[in-house]
Image: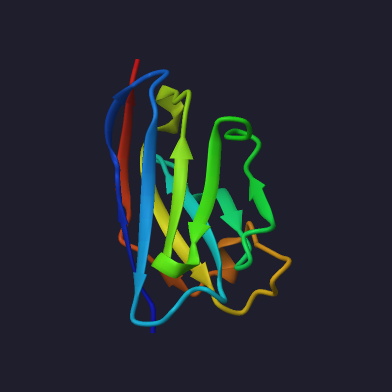
Length: 127
């Protein structure tokens, strides 16, 4: 069993930056692909970014490419999402997820691939 806890959310003005963290406990996630998803008010949860367990493969939603960076520190069992040039449309609850079945060279953008989820952290971007 894996427990995921997100932190780092908050309120920021448009153009600002935030770094989200996702700490895993209960079981190492060093062999799991990790993903970030978000759910805006009135919308379905959507893919943001993912990283393979080796860290060598990353993928991003088109809406965040060039602004967000996903990374991981397997020694700390932690995944990060650095968010820059934030826009009001980035406002959402951000969720961290783990896919322990992935290969080292893959990170899925599909929610169905992820077996473990955190509780989410709110990010609010004001204009």
